[in-house]
Amino acid sequence: MASRPTFVCPLPGCHNEIRWTESIQSKGTPAPDCVRCGCRVGLLAGAIVLLIASLGQRQHLYQGRPQYYWSQQINSLNPALSNEAALVLNQEIIPRLKKIMFEDTNDSSLRIALIDKLNGLPAVNIFFQTADGRRAAAAGGPGDFGAAAHAAIPALLQAVQSQDRAVRGPAAVSLGKIHAKPEVVIPLLITYLDQEELRESAAEALGEFGGRSKAAIPKLLILFKVRDKSLHHTVEEALRKIDPDAAAQAGVRLGPSTAPLSKSGAP
Image (cartoon, rainbow, N blue to C red; front, top):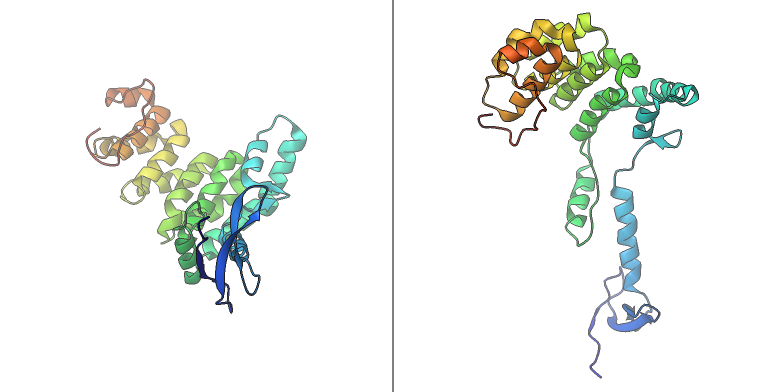
C-alpha cells in the first residue's frame, strides 16, 4: 500500500507532522490527523467557515421578516396585513433607510481585504456591499412600497439634492415610484434632465407621474435623440407613459418595448 502524504500542521502553535487518516469512515472522506498532538486540520476549516459567516452581510429583518416581504404585503387585499405592513414601514423601515442614506459612510478596510481573500477560495462567495452600495440600496428602498412610502419624501428630496452620487439616482427613481407631491417633485426632476449624471433616473421618475409630467416633454424629446441606448429606452418608456400622442409624433414606437442591449451606441 502506498504511504500517505505528510505535511506540517497549520494550526497555531503546532508544527508537528501530519498524516492522512480515514477519520470519517462512513463517508470515506480523509481527514488529516496530527500524529503527535492529535489536533485536526478540520478545526482550521471550521474556523474559516465561522469567519466567512461573520464577514458576510446579513439581511436585516423587520418583525422577523425581510423588507421585500413587507413591500408585498403593503398592497394586500387583507386589511390586517396591509395595515401591519404600513405600520412596520413607517415605524421601522423608513427610519432605518434614512439613517443608512445619510450616515452609513464607512467601511472596514480589514473586513474588505479579508472578504476579497476568502472569495478567492474555491466555492466561497461572501456577499458584501460597500457603504456606497448600502446607501444606494437604502435610497431605492422606499420606492418598492409605492405611494405608501410618502413619509420618505422629505428624506428623498434631501438625498436627490445632495452631493452624494451614490444616493441621488436611486432617490430620484424612488420619488417617481411614490409619485407624491408632484407640484414639488416634477419641477425638480425636470431640472435634472440637464444633468448627465441624473438625466436617466429623472426621466424614469417623470414617467411614473404619467400625464402630470407633460412639462418635461420638450426636454425628453431632446434626450430621445441622444446616442445612448439605455437612456433612449428609458426616455422612450417615459414618453409613452406621459403623452402617447406626443410620443408617436416624435417617432416613439408605441408597441411592446424592448430592453436596451448596451449602454452606448445608436438605438
